[in-house]
Image (cartoon, rainbow, N blue to C red; front, side, top):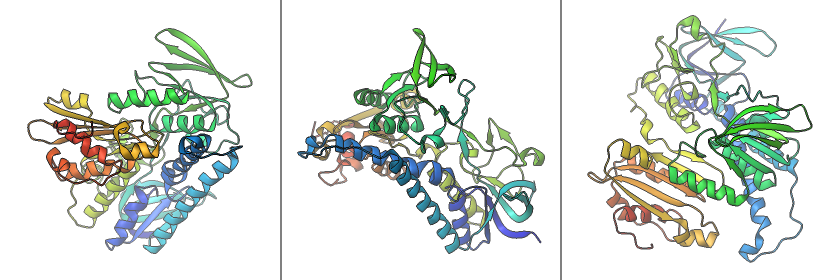
Length: 464
């Protein structure tokens, strides 16, 4: 007999497992189909293990410059294998945590690869090739994404690698070329450079971290060059010769072609959705530009089938997938959830310096026709940043001059990923700049910079 549920979810990443737990809380019988590890890419090969690697790199950087804090340390080194092992241990612990949470909430896990057979039916292929059918009135697709592979960069996981292999290299490469400067690219560029690798970033767009505000990009480039990272923008990798001992990378720039020699090429040119062999075509589920088309409650055009996370339009971010999953199952349970405000989604990059942003960039706000007030506060003027020895970066805020609407905020510096939520909540509550200025922020903290930047926008800044 087929396993039967109220809701079955294909994929257990931050969209799938969160949706499963919330559905169970709402009294629904829930099953999750997972072909690999619970927690998906984020917990096992993305968000969590990369942050563990980045923390090791940050600690190593501190150890290399103890004199800046009045300290001394000799013969500072590292065991690269142990750094990688720590990262994998953190990921394994988080995956076990998801397993515990699913069991606690009575969610049944079905191991295998899911494929839609019909509305209400999913075929699960086990590792041994055997098949079983799972039935549910509501089926949610949450299959996520994987690294995009470029024609000029065929990933062999030896000399040309994706982000998964970049987390578990057996030894530290002497030279690396990172293709792409989104969050994945700049985070790995920081990690490997901090550990001692010579790193070159090749970015097709005119500036690194191209989705960010232009001033953020300039500061990031300045910080990275100070670290010794070579940066090529408006550049394209056209070929990689892996026939020799290392790699010879051909890069096309405005000045012509140049050759880069390295040991490893990391392809970090974004992600592509996992839609293959899901049965979408057979059921006539609408897909455009590699994304499943859904309404504001994540219903596809086929009744009873839903989609969330990286496979639907919107930012491919873990916290977005989780929010979408909760909205989806609350609607299934008969609640009336508020649709997700995609204009108020924070984005974070966890290199050093960190980047955090939400809302419009200054250019976007002006292009939309807003008369804007812009305020900036550098961390060089922050007492906490000076005490911590992390004075690089700034906070930038953008307000609508007419009504005081908070249009956007962009930060680069230490710990700014912990500060951006204040802006998200304030924008959700339609808070104005004056209310931020009059909200007392604790001293000394990095978060004071947000209040000071807002005061700067309104001509009231004290500490500049």
